[in-house]
Length: 437
Image 1 (spheres, rainbow, N blue to C red):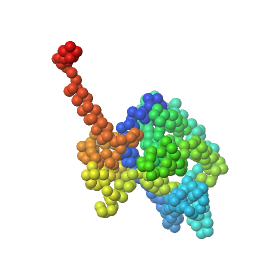
Image 2: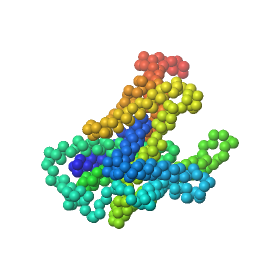
Image 3: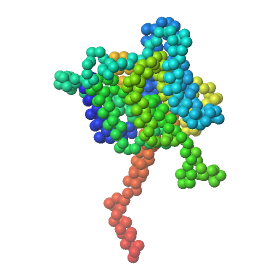
Image 4: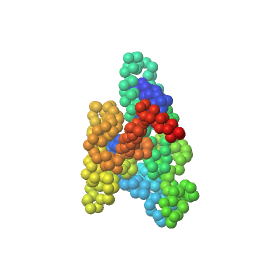
């Protein structure tokens, strides 16, 4: 596994050097990003169920029932506190912001302490396993570094294939996370040619391989949650505001992300603190039921910012209650079929990820791109696709680009049709001379 991650590292470097973001993500639409985001939500929900299943196998029935209560309680309290910004006029604004931004942390601390109160303290518990000494957690290892240089050369080259699969998965996961973090409502944009993030991702992947630990990359929904926590109100004045009418106020209020580096640094510092003694012991007090609740919360937060959820709600909405569509869109039938297709694709990929064919699941994610651009346009109405889908990294839709190409070709054809021929030139010259005479 070490060599697979090392190969993945230099592949990440190549992607960064050749600026793969610009020539790969330009073909990705929100069709793929919504499916990938929904897939992450399903994976988090499944992980939560797995944690509760382990509790059922290892704990008494009473302790298992409390594990369910602890998981659901952690989830509900975190969701409730995450809405604190809407509690106005209750509490001061900064208190509401603190409750909202640290909802998950507050809920986790609360449900770490509750099972140690009163009669609940007598229940058997299943907590996170942490190392109690500065040594590898695997008892078979005595050093932190994997002796990857001792692997036969044949196997070193064989590790290129899994390294490629890991690279595809990590690159797509990272890029989709970047896209979700730079949605229009955040008013942020990843600049062209900015690839240091891919270099850093490749470096950390190689370090994980050398240390013999699983590589970490999953940025959904952590990255969108980070963007949400940095949202603040900005008042635009003067030339920054496009006045639609003379009666409108020249001051416009928008919500945007406050871009800085402190929250990233504090996040990394917090992780470093809690993997170091004595705080690692505190981490070991966390019941696995709380971890299940955290997985539920992360899955819900990822799902809540997915536009697919709104369209799924329209499936359950009576026709009379649905919002009106633009005149060019033929109706909701195509929109519902589009939403159902996204859900079916997500379920298929999720099921594949649970089988022995799991290593190919990143390839299935990539295949979504040609499916949308080459096949779906033959089955769906163009205006329906224009309404529900768009380019993920640029303005407009695939249909807009096709229309622009058709107009450009038509304009070029008309220019060619009116271009003077060799036969016409003497006539024009003669006509000019006679006119001068």
